[in-house]
Amino acid sequence: MDTTASKRIDGKGTAVAVRADVAVRVERLVAQGVTPGLAVVLVGEDPASQVYVRNKDRAATGAGIAVQTRKLSAETTQAELLAVVEELNADNSVHGILVQLPLPKGLDEGEVVRRIDPAKDVDGLHPLNVAALVMGDEGLVPCTPAGCIELCDRYGVDLTGKHAVVVGRSMLVGKPIAQLLLGRNATVTVAHSRTTDLAGLCRTADVVVAAVGVLGLVKGDWIKPGAVVLDVGINRGEDGKLYGDVDFPGAEANASLITPVPGGVGPMTIAMLLDNTVTAAARITGLEA
Ligand code: NAD
Image (cartoon, rainbow, N blue to C red; front, side, top):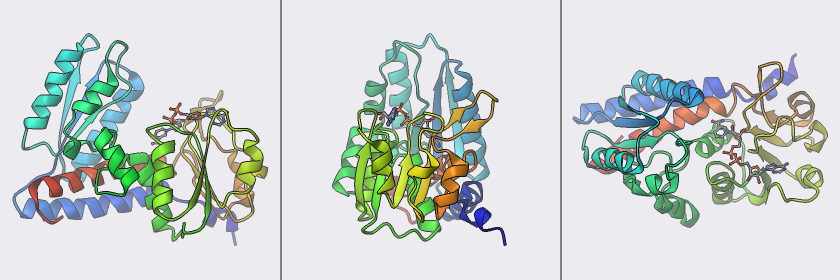
């Protein structure tokens, strides 16, 4: 029997399952007269952002969500961008607003995020949603961290009492994942670029979440036998292929469960965006989804 294959968390397949669940929730809202709407705002010509936006559009449309993509030129001013956000805030057919980051130089991302109606902030980055996450209140949770927890849930990983080491402390990934793990009663350590003895710390972890952006930073022998490894990193190798932050072959030998890159955490991000959009639509309209 191939035991290594069964250790791999199938993010692609899980995302398909999540998207199917989302489609059912969409149908439920449509039957009550509301089609969930997602607005994606893309400023400038960044090639990676264009691919992400296209994928989001396709996946949302596939789940029955009404998508509108607003493409704005790289010369768009802060005031013009804020005006688009305000227009979408006021549009009753839009329940989720996503401004694709990073924005071109000169635009103030923080101000743009703060201007999005928190009820429509499907990226979960508005300060009120950040506060809700920390306080354990109802809010919208950033998609990639939400995807990590969804993978744990669907693979039956009980986080209670586990020592989780999150490597990376960004607002987008590291910090919200740490909060979500705390919410699941894990004991959480957040490591970052100034952490000393990262190897020793990871060796004590029952769950390692790597969200750094450094190819192969987390070595296979840092993984305790039986640990769960969630690799959020997306890095392009010299061979042109995508790799995570974890040395996959080495870590897979020790882990009980591990996400590959690609095909692990990545596909979950868009699936959770769709889930957030339906959740936002249900809350805004007061309907069951
Ligand atoms: P970021 O650059 O904002 O944050 C990186 C974090 O890593 C920082 O907190 C920094 O302190 C820490 N760090 C840097 N070097 C380190 C080191 N040597 N040791 C320990 N910690 C170190 O990046 P981010 O936005 O959090 O993204 C992290 C990675 O996740 C990137 O590869 C990004 O492409 C990927 N990502 C993937 C998805 C997805 O859908 N799968 C979504 C978002 C980000």
